[in-house]
Image 1 (tube, rainbow, N blue to C red):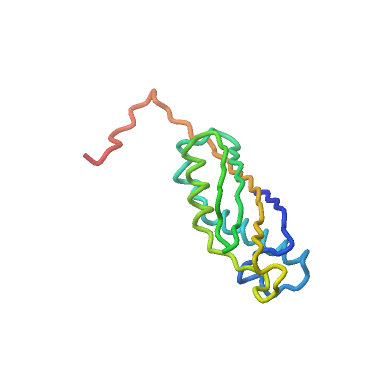
Image 2: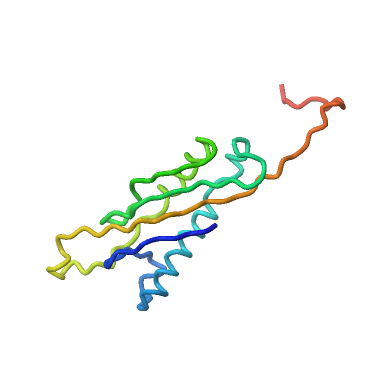
Length: 141
């Protein structure tokens, strides 16, 4: 999966990445963590029946709001079921932690939201069924 994002000056972070002090390394840590989460939690088996044979792409765009929750999820895929699964997966991502210093008067009342773009890509291999031969019973009834 490929992932890109834009960062505001006061980003959100994850518990795993919160102690990283270098901004560039921390951004990479967050990117990797979100990618791993989607890789693990996007249920390709549940949507394989709705996917096209070959490579399937679902383009998603979302924001992380001021409290660290994924909001305003927009998705585009070849089937609604692929899009619904992408939304479910992104909504289930744990809330992020704000790196904003709440004691700093200059940023205290400002809202900083990060915008993310995440193309989800997976491949479906078509299984051929030979209908010329009797298959036997395929139900439990």
